[in-house]
Image 1 (cartoon, rainbow, N blue to C red):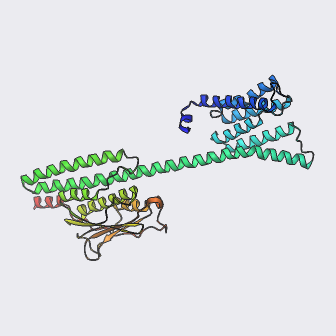
Image 2: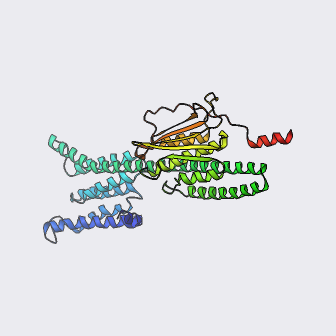
Image 3: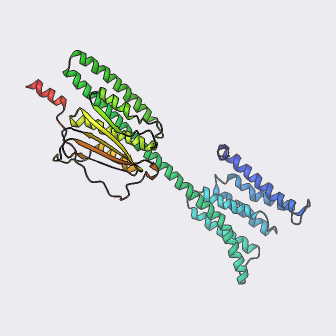
Length: 395
């Protein structure tokens, strides 16, 4: 019903509303008296009633002008001796103006109050005694109530629109972060394959080229899907497929714990998958380790994700500022109301730990304490394979 009304052209819809109000205004006195010529119902009265309703045809294009024109027709009717000409229609017009007017909304309420006072004075409610003053005040307040309601409804609509804009901005940020994670992950894998092919046999090079072709095709598909996403519903959350792809690229991944497919909100599953993917990408880039462990545990309403490797990082590794990948993972967790920490393990290697709520109803807000997480140490980046090849060529 609402969608059908919005599809109607503005002038047609508002013109139909004006005609309907005119018919109601003209028909109620006839039905109430039971005669074809009730007391006070004259051609002049009918013309004035139509004049009161007609300005509503432009109530959305010229909100305040329509209300003032309708109010002027009412005042003219009162001066001509027809005090009961559709005063309520003008109140509706002012309420509509309060809702549709974008600038100086306070002016609508002020003009409505002035019109109500003028109408009251013209009908004989002059403040000559306390009772007449009380009647005038009551009529003004009663007339302003719909105007204030229109103002409140407009404020509520503006707030809803702002929330939609914020939601869209967050969605764009999420998609940008996803593109960064996907592209970075696959490009790192392609680079490792290329470096390995340079140092291997022709058969190894042929196999590396096949793997690069598969990785690039997967990256292209993931990127296209992400750029077309409006929600998280279509996001990939299959950790088994991720582990299988990485094993073909030289990193053996062991999955332990619960699956992400049951009892976990889609938004949380998507965030958990991206955190695991980015963590494993960092293992391939920086750790020098050939294996990693992904452990997923559920405790009550929390989902705990732990990614470990046995690479080069040690507790004494110097701390460095967070990179884009680690910041992105932490932002994902905090957006859902969770936390993420990363740093060297007690013995050797690196560990990323994320805790997310199973239900994302508490998401979109910072952590409960509002405090920033403690800074984490970043593992020292080993000399790249390309650097080793350069050194060997010059020695």
